[in-house]
Amino acid sequence: MFRGLNVLGIPGSLRKGSFNRLLIKNAFMMLPEGSNAIMYDISAIPLFNQDLEKDPPESVRDLKEKIRASDIVLISTPEYNHSYSRVLKNAIDWISRPYTENPFVSKVVAIFSASTGSVGGSRAQEHLRVVLNALGALVVPRPEVILVNTNKKFSSEGKFIDPVAIELMRQLLKEAVKLAIAVKEADKVLQKI
Picture 1 (cartoon, rainbow, N blue to C red):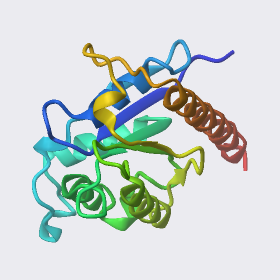
Picture 2 (cartoon, rainbow, N blue to C red):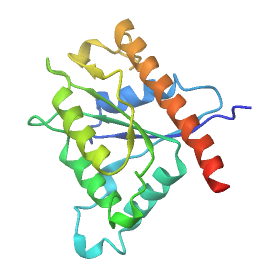
Picture 3 (cartoon, rainbow, N blue to C red):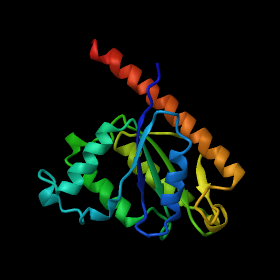
Picture 4 (cartoon, rainbow, N blue to C red):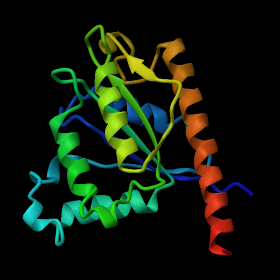
């Protein structure tokens, strides 16, 4: 019997009124019943210092543990200067170190982006996908959810109102859930080997 999934949302923006944070909140509402979803605020993570990677700050240890405990990680990023945000890159650098303790290995990750501009973060997603694939994450390949002109995609209450984008998000989440269930089943089989 399906008991729900543990889902971690990581917005790649620190902005108080972040559309990427709103996008994750709306995605949480589309998850299967019984799922446990939490949002992680990466603002407490200090700048990466390789001298500390073997004994990272508490905020880094906390995020790594939350990733390990999750079945799916949702990452939403803005696009800054043709790539994803520096604060998200900084968090990923911490999380992936030391390399032997990287919690992204075989972790299902769904990425999406929101931007008030006309590109919607497509280049940011491309760069983020390359990095996550290199870290061994199972990045859901499609559909790509790229919100352009985001200020017109949400109601004044923060509810997602674009029907096409809502359907794309539903499809992305369905693919992430299918993949996460397959990984859980595979892990059960592999424990017997």
